[in-house]
Structures are given as structure tokens and as C-alpha cells.
Length: 115
Image 1: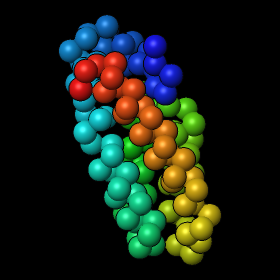
Image 2: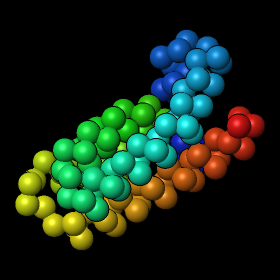
Image 3: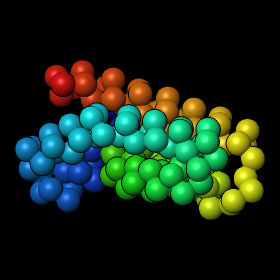
Image 4: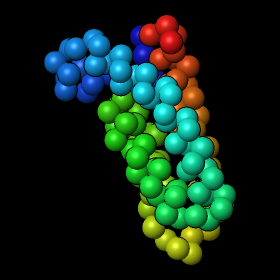
């Protein structure tokens, strides 16, 4: 039973197509960690456009996988990145939380789907 993600939306939009579901979870496991590193890099370098772009890229995936808290937090990161004078300390804890949610979901997905 999935505790850190929910595939209800994925099944709903795919009309219960298990191959599609597998594609989505595989893409999540392979792409989102790298995209998160880019968000982290953007935060560290105060490259607001980079942080925003990668947060924006991740946002629909977190929503699709039913990761409500991580989805809300990535929106906070997007909003932070829109402020050119934003303070880095304000967003680091939010980023760490998103990272933890994603790591837990990936670990669970790998186990659930034998990836």
C-alpha cells in the first residue's frame, strides 16, 4: 500500500492502462531527482530563473502522483523564485522537505514496482 504517493489520478487519466502507469512511475523515479538537484542548484546560486523553471517542471508530476504536501511546497519554491530579492534561508527548509517527500516516494515506488 502506497503511503508516500497516490496513483489514483494516473489510473484515472490512463483508463487503468498499466503500461502507462509504469511509464509515469519510471519517469518519476529517473527524472525528478535530477530536476530537484537543479532546483537546489538554482537556490544555492540565487539563479531564480533556474530554480523556478525546474520547480515548475516538477509541479505537475507531484500533483499527478498525489503528493499534496510536496506539491504545495514546490509551489512555494516557485513563488520564492519569482522574487528577485528573495532570501535563501527562507526556502532551504521547504526544499529539504520536498526532497524528503520525493525520496520516500521513490523508495516506495521502487519497492512496489520492482524498479
